[in-house]
Length: 225
Image 1: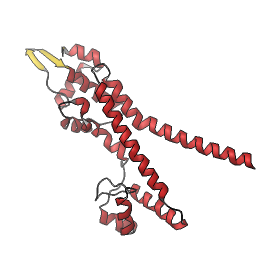
Image 2: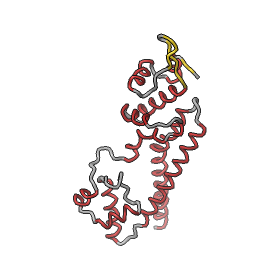
Image 3: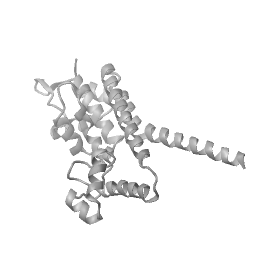
Image 4: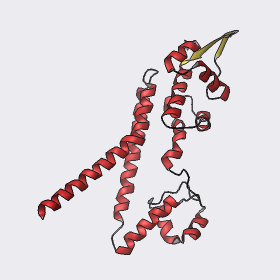
C-alpha cells in the first residue's frame, strides 16, 4: 500500500520531522515522488520506522548502530538476522572491557596455553573471535582452575554450555516463528516479544528457578535438623 506522510505519522506515532530526518540520514529509503511536494510512502517505511523507534527507545541503540544494521538487511525484512546487529554488542556483554589478542591475553594474565586451548575447543571459553579475548574470558578460566584446585570435576560447566546452546537454538526458533506470522499490524509486538525474552524474561526465569531450588534445599536442611 501507499501512504501519505501524515498516515505514516499516525501509524507509527513518530513525528514528520523525525521521519524526514531518518530519510536524510539514510535509515529510510526515499519516498516515491508523485509530483512537486507530493510523496508516497510504503509498508516498508512504516515497519522500518517502528523498528528504529523500538531499537532507540527500548534497546538504547544508536543511530549509527541501526544504520549499520539496515545497510545489511535483505529484501525480506522479517527474515533478516542482520536486523539483530544493534543487539550484538549487548548480547556479547563486552561494553567497557579491554580487549587482548590471544598472545597478549596469555602473557598479561599468565594463562596456561594448553588449558586455554582446551577450554576454547570445548567452548567453555567463548572469545569474541579466535584472537579477541577480554577479562570476562579470564574469569571463566579462573573458575575452571578453582574446580581443578579443589579436585571437583568441571563437568558442571560442560552442562552449562550444553544447555546454553540448547537455549540459543530455542531463541533462534522463536525468531523464525515470529517472522512466519509477521504482518504490518503485529510487527512491533513481535520485536518486543523477541527482545524482551532475550533481555528480561531469560534473566527473570533463570534467577527465579535457581532461587526456588536453593530455597527448597534450605528448607529441607532446616527440617532435618
